[in-house]
Length: 123
Image 1: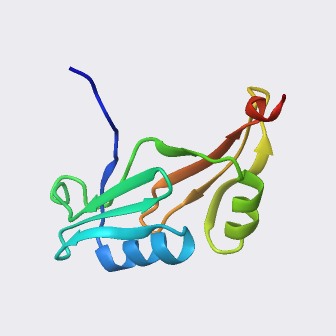
Image 2: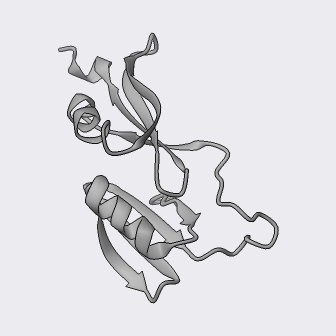
């Protein structure tokens, strides 16, 4: 028995706005949608799913007590493409632990971090 894949399932208050943000701003595409209840979005090897609110009664606002960390080999290009279009958590920076990264918030205020491992480029 083995695990094969991890795909986050996040709640959204507005499925159409979420799909639009991920497609138009982040370059994902909606590959499957069931009414306005559920959608799967993909870009390259990354997938994220969104659903209607199941926890709204207990939690009126969407939240995630962490972030989604997305590895890329073109972090500088992604930063240049996104920095004027999104709400920024922290700008592009190179960290002592060998990652070059930045973080933004999506239309639901979920934290998305984009990082490039610099040790992969040192040959």
